[in-house]
Length: 200
Image (tube, rainbow, N blue to C red):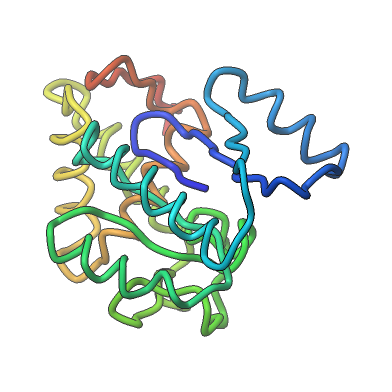
C-alpha cells in the first residue's frame, strides 16, 4: 500500500487465495475512485507479495521521485529495502497498520516498535507536540502571509519545514501536509497549490 504527496492513493495487493474482503474496506476503496487499485497476484509463493510491492514501489518512485510512500506491513523484511531507497533520497516508511501511520496519529503518546522509518527511528512526531499543534502553527503562518504564499508543493513543503523548525522530521512535515489537504486548506492541481484558509 502506498501514499504520495500530491494525491493520496491506495494500492492493495491480493494473493490468489484472497477471495473475501470486509465490506467497509471495499466501500472505502470505492470512494477513492481512480486513486485506488487492487493488484492481484497471479501466483502465491515465498516472498511473492514482497517482490510485487518492491517492483511497484520502484516503478512509482521512478515516476514521482518526490513522492512520499508508505508500506503498510508488519514484515520487518521491508526495512532493508527502505534503507536502500532512503539512501537514494526516496521518501518511504513502513507502518504496521493504517491506523499507526504518522498522519493518523493525533496524540502520539507511545511508539509502536513496528512503526518505523528505515533507520529504526520513530516516524511519529514527539509526544509533546501533536499533529494538530503542528498543523495550527503552519496554518497561522500561511494566514499571516496573505500574499506571497508558496505556489508549488515543493515551495510549500520548504515553507512548512522552516515554520516547524529544522529539527522536525520529514515524516512529520508529510503528516501536516496531508492534514492540510484533508481539511481543504490546500488544494493541489498537478504540482501547483492554492489555498482556502480559515479566518484566524
